[in-house]
Length: 181
Ligand code: NI
Image 1 (tube, rainbow, N blue to C red):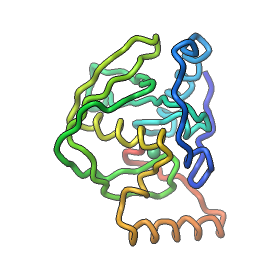
Image 2 (image 1 turned 120 degrees about the horizontal axis):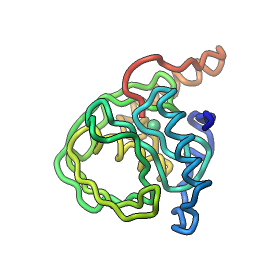
Image 3 (image 1 turned 60 degrees about the horizontal axis):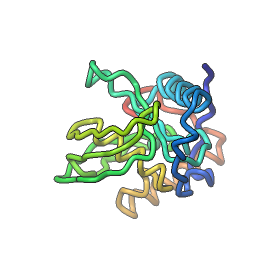
């Protein structure tokens, strides 16, 4: 396994709509990429990582919510489609591609998502906890949307100013704690 480089906003790949994975692409080489993404996510550390964040513009992601759902080891979600959503919830989100970002983001509380697993098998998950939030955050990455696009225009502007300042000072230092997705 190998660690992959996580790209940061506003890298162009993070702004694109990623293309679907063709089921014929889901082979051992693809599973090696998934394993590398899981290793990269755990090392970061983060609770979710979408393929565009490692500069792969395809519709898949990995999640690790094992600290909240002990029976669920880290796993991959390929070509996810949210088929049902209800309610609203707010959670303080970070993001591995947004240095020092930490803001309340509103999302659907309960979702049902259909996807292919790492063996190309169709799966369905319904969740109304952390997993639902992580999946919505990562699907946003597949659509070229980052969490900073989900906050008020004023807060977004302040965050982008902060990023520019960090760039000028050469100070893009990742945070060391918290839930980053
Ligand atoms: Ni993120």
